[in-house]
Length: 452
Image (cartoon, one colour):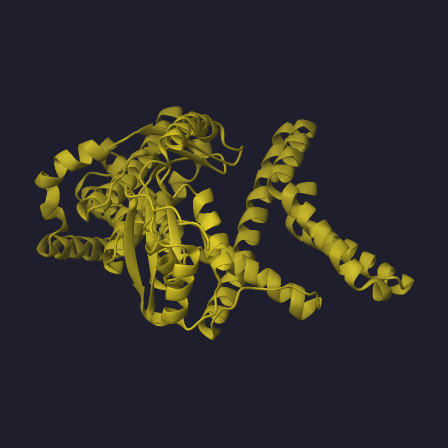
């Protein structure tokens, strides 16, 4: 007879969320010590929920088989429990608990160092824990989420868009000037930068306050540097615990909503003030930053911003981006190159969503990255010449180094699987010629204006 299994930690926060399209639920478990979140399917949580410090693996296997008409053994249950134990979700004895708390303190210190360093393209710098402040101000601003107030703000935004279209000529002329950085003074550029940072801060406050409004916590706000651009972030992972999908979507869209509202108010200020005045120019900058950020970045589901998380939550498919890339890789490997590869069993609905979304994201991100690189390359080479070319090579390595490594390994795998076919000299020569031709055509089409 097997030993009694350890008990689930009593301090864990557990919330169930219904998956309508699958007629089941998932369980989100929050570790309040590590500030980590874990997602378990209905069958997995059934096992976890029976970890009461009394039952054995055979007891839980018997209950599981009776509930789900399966044929699991005690060894299967123990193997799954080992995974739970690795994530520190089970109760510990006093000695193990002291060791765990000591290791956790060391890990928190290391984590802060890692976050402050990060990588050249993406790193975070935590600043403050705003949760206490949010809790204090919430009683005074709860009216902001009341239905009449929301309806009024929607009217303000709709009417602002109409006013903007009525003044489209002036808006278009101002747009041509605001992106002409060479004609602007350092003060004007600083004001534009300060406007961008202020709008981003308001955006993140919208996320954090809305999360607190519906019962979640926000313990971290800080700076985020992504692709060399300064941004801000608010950690609202507590929204994953919300059982109501609408509340989760409210948190996701709160940043864009408040951003669009600020931009709409700026429209009225811009229209009602004299052209050339400081307040008029500042209002115009706010309009451009708010509307551009909300429409082209945050609402865009193909970039990992608010629109993506909203789509993922709406479709009830977490990790949509990563899973779609894995599924697209699986399709290319098995359907085109006839490699032997497995993918987790998914429904017909998920196959369509993952396939289409994966293809769209791949095409979109390839065009965005190559466009940015060629734009930066043209600027660097034309201004810094040889040094610019060296800097461009470093950027290319940072962006595509790992990707090229994976591609080389994939090509090796294909050649190993189809060794007989690729051993033919004519096939290798044709493939090499096509590759060189494609690279030359792609580089020449994008880069010929710089070379000339």
